[in-house]
Length: 77
Image 1 (cartoon, rainbow, N blue to C red):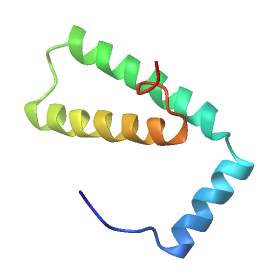
Image 2 (tube, rainbow, N blue to C red):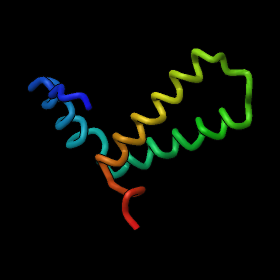
Image 3 (cartoon, rainbow, N blue to C red):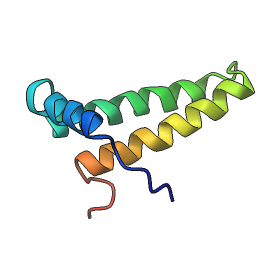
Image 4 (cartoon, rainbow, N blue to C red):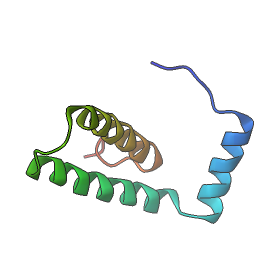
């Protein structure tokens, strides 16, 4: 597991983003919605290059991880 920490500047930008731009719960919903659309697109279309597929899989995983941090949903009953 990566032990990197956010820089104070990045932390400040994230706090500002979630305090003034979008609510964390709404961001989590938007991430899940985008992931749903992307997943359906990948399932239905087989024209994605292998390199792009790997990138999309990684992005899908990390966006879901972020969504769960912002608003746990999948790990709750």
